[in-house]
Image 1: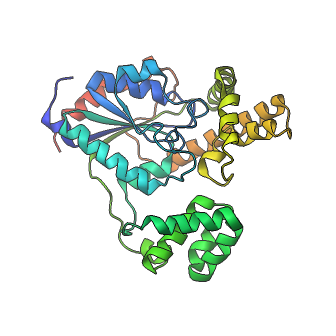
Image 2: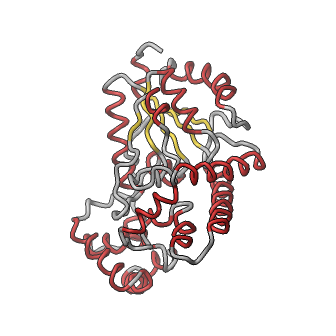
Length: 318
């Protein structure tokens, strides 16, 4: 598609549950419109998890540029707020270069953080996150939860004692600002970017989606997922880190530790994936206003349906 100035504030979103065919469709769309695919999945940011997060394969990445995949070390937590800031910058670079940003993923919180924003919390000095991580490593998430409850009971009440990522964030905000996260969240939200959006949500029929989830995990095992988790295990990272809770990681860790045979680990990981896909589908149905919701998983048929509408959207002024 030729460059058009009206596309310089346009944002395409290809969303849906895991294994719904988002990556292939996003690459097809980006190649057709001269776009860039920007990752919108909270686990695909980790460089240690190529196979288990189904990062787009090389042939897809050759069709169009891909950004924000595999850049974060598993030892470091990564938040929706940090992602939104990085994604906003990638989007601005796309617009400046005359390209169309195509967001692709299944993490609803990431989508909401970009389009709706967060409370205007100031940047927190790195030493405060380090202090929170030290408590997490030495005393555990339950102790961090207790300490947070003493200074920010409202936030602590919303968080499970094992929700280490959000506990760390709440504690570092308290240390860095002397204000609770609850207080900050009462402030008006500030979206990191404003754009015209066109949103496609893939919603394959549940039996087909579940079959795809199961088949994909088998392919992951064939591709070396067990070795990928073994390398992660060898690092001795805190099990409360987000990357350590990625689909398939806890189950394969249990197998490698001798607590579960491989067949049982495989079945447990497949069940966890199916349950997660169900939760994602529910979230997108309830939280996302989509321009299109194709009930199919065939990339070719979806592309044929949505591309004329995308073309019209990109050529329409505000």
